[in-house]
Amino acid sequence: MSMRRIWGVLAAGTMLSLAQLGLAGAALADVKAGVDAWQQGDYAKAVAVWQPLAQAGDPDAQFNMGQAYKLGRGVKADPAAAIDWYRKAAKQGHSRAEDNLGLLMFQQGDRAGALPYLQRAADRGEPRAQYIVGTALFNGDLTAKNWVRAYALMTRASESGLAQATASLRQMDKYIPQDQRNDGIAMARSIGRQEKTALTADEPRQSAPVSREAPKPIRTTQLPPSTPPKPKAPEVAPTPAPAPAKVAAVKPTAPKPALPKASSGGWRVQIGAFSAETRARALWSQLSAKVSGLSSYQPYIVTSGGVTRLQAGPLASNADAAKLCGAIKAAGAECMPKKM
Image 1: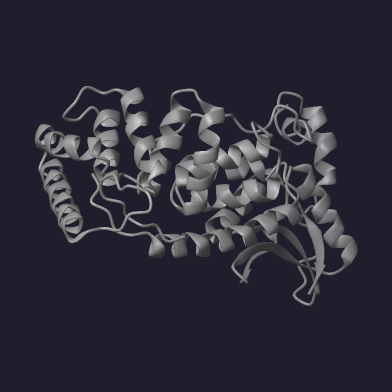
Image 2: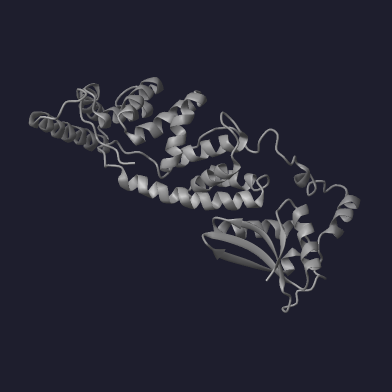
């Protein structure tokens, strides 16, 4: 959505005069002077330039004052003052002010009040907001559960480089069914296209630098949810190492290398679908360590339509594929036989 820059306080229904246009241009130049001072480390000068413009209603200056109070540069750190300035700029359509408003409100404990701002920030591609909203949707925290959208937003946050989101995706994989994960990956692609459109439509602003490429950690509701559909049964099986007799009883359910690796076999098993090849390879390494004999099969990384699928084989028959899937499922992963 295209945003109009509003300079100063304009009376509703009036037209800009040439004098007003001149004042707007002067305000733009003054805000830029403050940005230059900020980038040179002269935060006090930057704040002195922005403060009167912010009080007069300039949205960029208001956002920049929010940054100063949030970071404690040129003024004493004051989250409440930062929220106030962000809110004023956000009301005038300053998208980055709205992003920071939601994040700071969440950090200050106003999670319910922050959620609407975070939802819009997530739609614009803010990775920290995507992580928080994705977690809320997964857990049904302050909003209805929606595992497909939760997986999509967490995928986008992970692709932006947010390590917390990558870790959360691995946990989500244990609970969200394969078909919903596939739908989430497809939705993530659509969200990515919308983000690019929003960034193109948004006008450039005279703003204090925002560290969006290296987001700071956000503490939020922990994954997995408090009442997961499948408790911890799959995770318990690998842990009781002290009882050799029990381990021996579990091992025969995993396929042994005796299952034929015949090159003429027309069957494989599909273990999962992912948005990134690295995640498929990581899962193969984890399962190879858990499932006896799995490493004797050939892993296949198949990418099509923006989705990467992990498969293993070849196997001679559907029965052999089903046996291998049984062992993989016992290790806590999804699996299905597939005729090639």
